[in-house]
Amino acid sequence: MNGVRGPDVEDQMPAALETAVQRLTGIDRIGDYIPQVGSNLIYAKADSSTIEDAVALTGRIIATIRGPIACGEVAYGASSHLASVVIEAQKLDGEIRAGLNIRADDDVARRLKEVGLTVVTIPSKVKGEGCPVTHYIRRTGELADAYVHPGDFGVEPTTTIIARHPDRLVEIMAEIVKLE
Image (cartoon, rainbow, N blue to C red):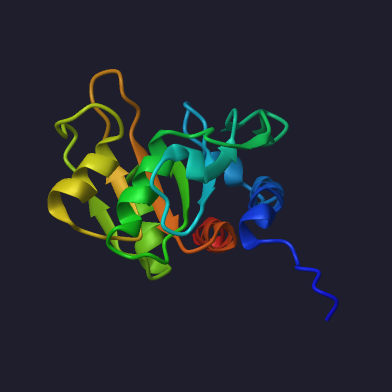
């Protein structure tokens, strides 16, 4: 070897997330799973401690009549809620590095369970500012693959899915979309 180092894994995170976003938006009928607030997909460094340790879209993935569109670009620090969920989950399992939010209803929860994920429905009111899923994980120490927040007054119901890599989240969505 001539002493030249290959790129760090963390240097590859933005490109890996961009690829995952492209694959996700290319799934047939994925728009049916995007909440009105939009979806985001994040990828965090191992042992993350702040939202600056995670790459995400600066905008959201939105559903349109022509199909889903990824708005914004991939950047560090672009997601506070999803990043906080992954950071909190890493305290329980250091392998968790990715998160995705989708719509929430009984059908989505059923499909997630059918593909073998553990699904927890959290209370609609969780004390604390910020993301209710983050507060729920911190308070209970309960690690699941997916957390359903049933919504609240002025808050849309959403499901947060976590995994080790954004590619796994894309695989999960491809699997649940195929279920009848």
